[in-house]
Structures are given as C-alpha cells and as structure tokens.
Amino acid sequence: MELLENFVFYSDCKEAIIESYGDVEIAKGKLKRSKYGNIEDHVLEENLLSIKESLGDKILNFFSKKLGGDVRKLDRIIAAMKEEEIRFVKDEHESESKFYKLSSALAQLKRDRASQDEQNIIILKLTNLQKFIKDLVKSHNSIMDDLEKQVDIITKKNNRKSDYYNLKRAQDSVETKKMRAEFKKKLIEDVEDNEYLANIQKILGTPKQADADLSKAKDQLAKEKENLGAGEEVSKNSEERVSNVLKTYHDEILACLQDVKDYSESSFTEIQDLEKEQKMDQKDYQKLKSLFDKKVDKAEDLIQKAVTLVSDIKVEDPDKVEKKNGALEILVDVKSDVKNLSYYIWPSEDLKDQKDEIDRIINKAIESARKAA
Image 1: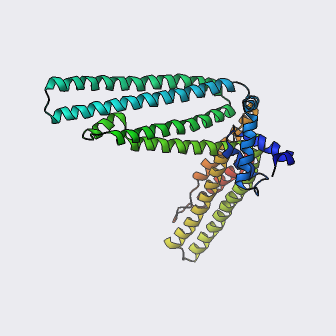
Image 2 (image 1 turned 135 degrees about the vertical axis):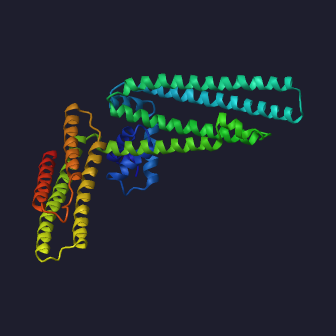
C-alpha cells in the first residue's frame, strides 16, 4: 500500500508513530490492533519508518504539543543521562583494565618471590585505584540522582510525559548496559593471569552480572513498550473505558453474588431436609461447603480483576480521577465483604442465625456493587 495513494492510511500511520513517541514497534502494534490487522508487518514497518524519517526534527514539535511542553528540556536531560552513563561505563572499563593488569603483575611478583617493597608499590597502586573506582561510582550516582530530580519536576502529575521519559530511558539503558556487558566479556578475554580473578570480580563485577543487568534492562524496555501500547489505546477515551469496565464487571459481579445468595438458601434448605431425615453427615456437609467456597472465590476473583483493570487505566482529569477512585473504593469494599463470607458451621443449633448473617453480608455487597457502576 503506497502512502500517497491512501491519505487515511498515511494519517493513521503518522498518528501512530507520534503517539508511540517515534517507536516503530509500538506504532505497528497500534495499527495491527486497529483496522490494519490484515496488512503484513513489513509493509507497516516500511511506511512507519518512512514517515518517521520524513518528520525528522519536526516530530519533537508534535511531541511537545501532545505532552504539553517541556519536551525539549526532558530530551536534554535524557541525553545528559545517556552521556553520563556512557562516560561512566568507559571510565569503569579503563579502571577495571588497570586493576586486572596490576593484579596480574602482583601475582607474578609473588610467584617470583620479589621483595616486599616491590610488592608494596603495586599494592599501593591497587589501593588507590580501588578508592578511585569507589569515588567514580559515587560521583556517577550523584549526577544521575540530580538529573532524576529534574525529571520528577517535569513529569510530576503528567502521565504522558512520564511514559515518554520511561520509554526513552529504557531504550538508552539497554544500549549502555549492552556496552558494559561487552566490555566485561572483552576484559576477561584479554586477561593473561586469572589467579586472582574471583577476588577482583568481587570488587568490579562479573560478565555474568553485566549480562543479568542487560537482561533486566531489556525486560524493562519490553514492559515500558507494553505499558505504553496498552495505555495509549485508552488515553483518548479513558473515562469511557473505566465506565465500560465497570459496566461489564458490574453485571458479572452481581450475577456471582446472586449465585452465592441463591446457593446459600438452597443448601440451607437441603441441610434442614437431610437433618429431618437423619441422613446429614460430614461427607454431605463438606460437599455443600466446598461448592459454596468455590462460588465465593469466583466472585472474589472477578472483583479483583475489575479492580486491576480500572486501576491500570490512566486518567488525568482531576474530576475523572475522583470518579475512578470512588469506584475503586466501592469495589475494594465489596471484595472485603465477600472475603468475610463463610459457610454454615455444622452441626450447630443456630443455623438460622448463620443464614441471616450470610444474607446480610451478601445484600450489603450487592448494594455496594450497584453503586460502583
């Protein structure tokens, strides 16, 4: 499909790439989930890349409008973070290389039974280098903390800016951690003497740890992309999405609660009938109780799903946030009521009182659930 032949397709692709902050993978996912699910991946990717390249620097202006300003400042901070990380990784690698070489030299002196004075010279250099590495880490952490505080000021109470920052930082983090892992591996390959390798790696870290950091960074990037993709789908219509979730689960929750209530009544009658016939025993009781517990668990799981879905929907308007939180509070209360439900204790002289308590709790939960929608 050629862009110029279909303006609607072009517009949708451009909107998707902008809404995805220039990430082709996320943009492609948005298009596939909408009306372009039948178009091959490579076609979407080619068109998205073409649009992204054509927008060039202008894309930042689109972001600025979408995010409400401060994007250029945010980009400068993100760039400063990446620059600092690259500088730190390179300085760390240089220091580690020196540490390995000095340690190997010390090992050789010990094997040669060199004088203690000669060994002390190397030991002093290692001590100073160790201090330098600690100061390097401290300085790096201090710089990153200061930059993150600036980010907090810009992204505070703005979910879209926060999404933008998290995605860009996650992408940079994968890149710098990959560089660090490669440095670690190269260092091990270049080391001639591995006698003190284990002790040295306790201070400087291992390739395995660097790979673990890289894997964690990749997982974080995937998570940010997933969150962004899911969040953007409802960002334009978040209030309606909250309403839809509440409406859908409202009917299902009420049906489950009514099922618990109906079963409570029917099993109560069954217990009474079996007692009259003197046929009631523990096996029958456990069977009745087990089914009641399953129905209660089903209702509780359903309520928790509704709570999770509504919580994950991003709402920025203060009034809408208040409505969303109000609905969540009600759902949490309903879940609490359901957790308090327990089946009849048998044998017992107060089965009727127990039934009244179950009815009271279920009726309260049903009444609250109706308010949530």
